[in-house]
Length: 193
Image (spheres, one colour):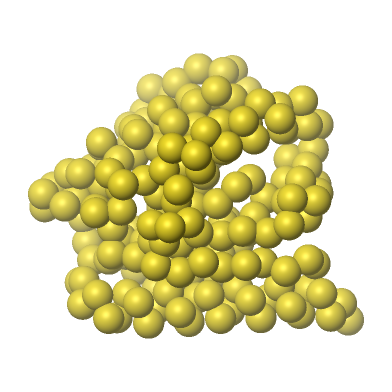
């Protein structure tokens, strides 16, 4: 039997999907772009997965696949803005290059993003003034710091633990420079689970 706190998380994410769907409908976009930003462990990936299931035509681009290493928050987001979001607004397919985290090198393959259907981009750093104008719906996801850290380290374990503070500093810089919460159409608060 799930705990009441898990029920609260599920309820919050379900409400968020409903709210995002309403905003997408209101935008009138035939191939909507949804950006989901937030700090590590906040619930961006869980939300994007639920939204993708509800959209059926969704292509989910997780910035975790793009960031060029542990110091690459800004570079990864800029890569997607320049190579995926900007071409899409112009009516062209975009593409992105991935990062091999085990070898700490760029992947050689390029990934084409379909021009049609819903594009969901999720990752820390994606909502900026430059990206906000290229999207139909902008989402900021937040959770308590202790919950975020526990979730992220449970998910990624020893791989992430030595880099937690390093990544958090980049998130702090992003928030200070871009104030993504203020650019969001919706703020999703994920309760303690």
